[in-house]
Structure formats: C-alpha cells, structure tokens
Length: 269
Image 1: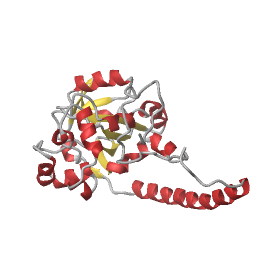
Image 2: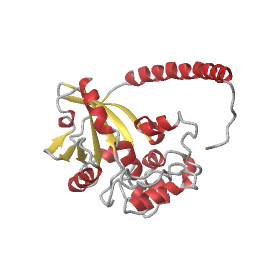
Image 3: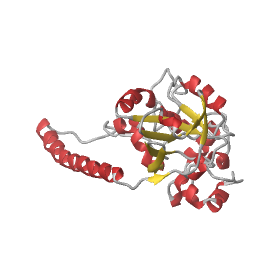
C-alpha cells in the first residue's frame, strides 16, 4: 500500500466534509453541462448512410429500432485490425448491463466500426457481449463524423497532415504530435496493426434524434470526452491508490480475457 497520512476519525470527518463541498459543486456543474448538451441545436442528416448488421442492411433510421434517440459508440476496429482496440474493449464491457435502462428511457445504443461485420460478430462472441454492433465498412459514416481518416496514411505524421480535424479528434491533444504515449504502440500491436493503421480509426460518441422520417445529429464527444463510459475509472478514482497507473496512461489495460487470472494486477510494476 502507498504511504499516506493517518489521523483520527474526527480529523477524517472534517476533511471529508470539506471535500464533500467540492464534490457537490462538481455535481451541480455537471448538471448544468448536461442541460447545455440537451440545448445544442440539432443538425438534419441528409445523407443516406447504410450499415451491415446481423439483421441485414440497415439505414441510420433503422438503427433506432423504433425509439427516438440513438447513442453510437465508435468502437476502434478498422478493416485491417485482427481484433478490437483493447481500450474500446474495456469500455464496451459495461454496455450490456445498461441497455435495458437506456431502452426504458427511449434510447437505443449501438456500436459502429469499419471492420466487416463478420469480424465484429466473431470478436463479439469472443468477448461474450450481446449488444448490437453494425459495420460501416462501405459507408462514409465514420469519415463524416470524424472518427476515421479518409486515406489511411503511411505514418502518423501523414495522418495529421492529411486530415487535421480527424487527427486532432483521434489523437486528442497537440502534444501527441511529437510524443505518442507507449499505449499507442501497445494498442496498435494488440489490434494486429501498426500505428498508422491504428490511428486511421478513432473512438467517440455521437448522439442522434429521430422525428418522423427525419434524423438529426445532436451531440459528439471524443478522446477523454468518452471517459464517462469507462466505469472502472470512476470506481478507481474513489480508492486509495486511485488509477495507480504508475506511468504512461492506460498501459495496464487489457481485454478482460487477457489478465493473469492467478494474480492481482500490479499497475506499477
């Protein structure tokens, strides 16, 4: 266990009450931001996007499955990948459990990736998931919503030059230009591709609404803006060691069937 100050119950309570003030302020601020998200203007979708699903070819409107709201998680699984991104996989582990609750509030949630459908469904079976997953392999959808590069470059620098808007969303921060973290190469290798192939895809969340025959784009979030889906981080943030990453962000993260079952994970080793 890490070294930490100790104190009496009274000292703990005083410190906890002081922290509670900040937590409540953060909650109120989060509520305000949620309201602002809901007040964003809607943009009518004019293009006829087509997807492959396990139920056949579907339009964007079909993906709503009769509901009026659609949440899309752009899962990093490009056509050249041999497996889904480990970080996206860890994120998606929580999806099955939330679906009934979202559907009760008129929300359909789905993953969309550019890999052919047969790859996605095979990987879904491996991971033990059952959520809906659609392929946008022959669609402009991922390109239009900033999570795929239109021309797979030969290196990351080329990606930044060829599609700067997509690159900034994929990489998330200007600092990545000169100092890619170890997790990038690690995840690329674990996905069966190189850095250029890995960063030709990105993760993100896009939200849509449907009224009659019209579909509207309502909200987008990328990079750390999708962290709200990574429930394990919120739990770790409340433990004494926190995320305990002990170095470059996320290098400890694995697919759930790849951890050493016989030993606890020491993130700092």
